[in-house]
Length: 215
Image 1 (cartoon, one colour):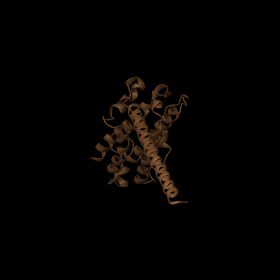
Image 2: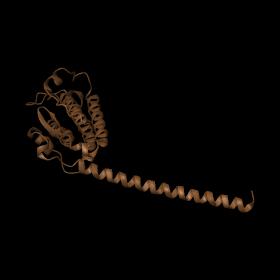
Image 3: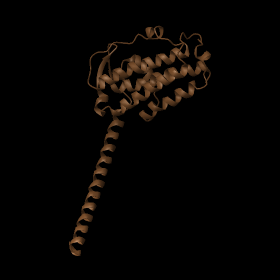
Image 4: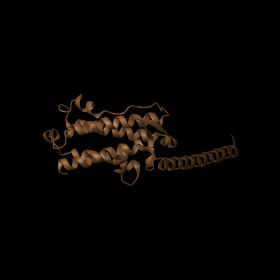
């Protein structure tokens, strides 16, 4: 290969590399723009639900979700839960505070149960599985599970893992699926309302637990 041929080949390779880099930059730009578009649609999808999206019984829970970024509120409760119970010993966790009839451990167990059940409804409805789902009788869940032997720390860990799994699930729900509406406990409810109930239900019980624990 002559010197001129070698220089021409090098120039062709350089042009090819420049084109490849330019194409990669364009692809990255479109990928970023698409992500921004998806995030914008998701932010709109997870707006606060309207009152007609849920049965009036749940209005107390929805109202206890403060203004702010939905996912920050959802994930922020993990630190709240760990912080509240960090210095609570086992004796305190098993103490009944009149007029309440559940120990703090049992309340955490109830939060685990509700987190799973609300998430099951949310998961199924968001996927388009709109078969009517039964209500929850919370009593047997407390009566028929052991809340003495498991440590408070292990119960809090279980609740946190449930919440973290639900946060990941909510991240991948299509924006249009937040509008899906199914029947639970005999009443229509949207995916959006169920997502807010996850936050509001825990806030409701955290408020009572802080009073009980003097925090």
